[in-house]
Image (cartoon, rainbow, N blue to C red; front, side, top):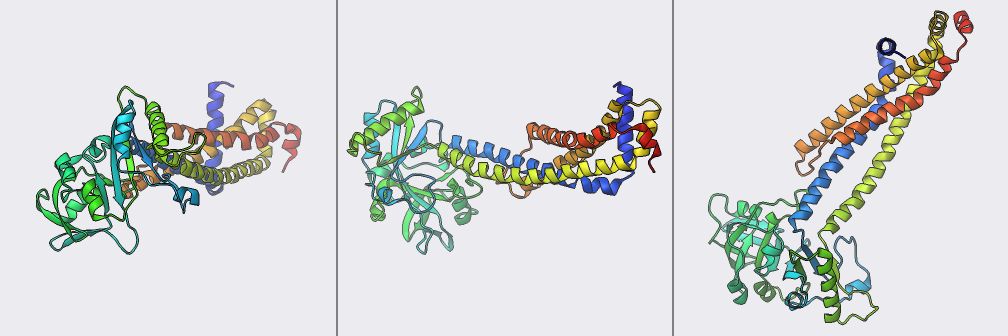
Length: 417
């Protein structure tokens, strides 16, 4: 088919659809819904994937953690996990001394309460509740770069040695307690005890606006252990040497901890080694389920839209039987008739796909604007996929009506009323 003939068929297709606006609009509704849902969810997931990866990198590309309990587990762990021995305060220095691939190892302890007993920090009449209190050592900020200090300083070896009552607070805590003054050097009351503020962390609202550095208060580990003797959960943050691979350092730490904790040769580890990648893995599991659900919804919408396209094309073939007969009588080939009706079906589905892409992009932009913690981003790949899906629906569901029109006998068509 020549370019002029193709252009003529396309103009005929557009004219036909324009003459039946309401019917055409209702027909493409399913395609619009399907493509919109695909573009919207894909944009949100793409943006969040980049956000999660950046978040993982902020923990440090060479950093991993040794814990008693597995990270990312929902619900109550099995009894054999709950009965594991606690990690010890001496584990971090032992790892650093024993493992050649380890550059730094530092101990941390947490006081995280969501129940009736919550942590509170006061300055004058201003206070912040439900913060996260963490006991740390001087190397903590080097091992986890996310906890970088914007004002003042971090916990020093002198603070640790003398169990000094000093605290480094998150930016959100500083904003609430010291809206108009410099917090460094001020004395706050943390759970009723006086602490000198020695630093403020860089601003970090956290994952999806929660559980970020902004709501942390870090104190010397020795002071933490003295004031909260009932807390026994210890974790170790480990940073591998620059020239060593993360896997090599992990393997050395696992062997060291197995020996230190006297795990039998064929026994399971009674501790966990957790990479920041666990966050990515957990996220991939969640988005996998979301993508599956979206695929099902989109498929239903596209199926309904495709059936609508086929239905309207069959009706169009019936209504235009006489036209088909006239075109064949004056020399139109079966291929010309088939292409004409295919073009109509593809044009119809393409319009639906275009509207769906625009709506999906608008929804993604709206989500990004109203909820900045969900950084939706529309990629060219998903736009191309939306166009491909809509074209495929038009071709697949438009082929049967187009073939039926092409096979009509011109004499029968001319007799049709």
